[in-house]
Structures are given as C-alpha cells and as structure tokens.
Length: 93
Image (cartoon, rainbow, N blue to C red):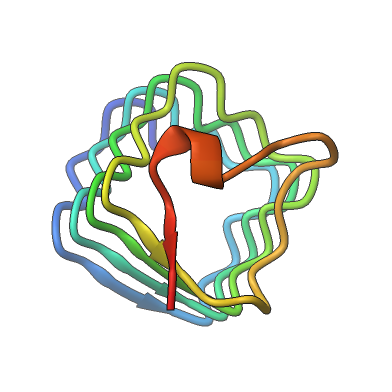
C-alpha cells in the first residue's frame, strides 16, 4: 500500500496488515495500532506522536526521523533490530 503523506490521525487500526507499506511522512498521531503488522513498512518522517502501539510488529520497519514523542507501547510490541524506542520518546505501559 502507498500511504505516503496519508492523514490517519486518531485512526483505530486494529489487526491491520501494513507489511511493507509506504507510510513516509504519514500522520498517525494519536492512532491506535493494536496487533498491527508493520513489518518492513517505511515510516520515515512519519508522525507517531501519542500513538498507542499494542502488540504491534515493527520488525524491519524504517523509522528514520519518525516522531514517536509520547507514543505508548506495551512490552509485546516488536521493534526493528537495533532501534531503541525509549530514546525516541516512547513510554511503556
């Protein structure tokens, strides 16, 4: 899917499959990504501020310059190898 620059502000994306999707510069602020599959998705420059990541899978995703300020994640959320969510502003619940 090509969602480059899409406005998904506050969207409830439960069990959505966005594996490999282009979400460059997309606005996902305040969205709920519950059990979302974002493996290998391009989230470069995406706004994920205040997003809720519950059992989300971001393994292999690109998060260069993504805004994760005040995002909330659970311990089941999977991140790209070598990515430290805490240093980007993610809080764990």
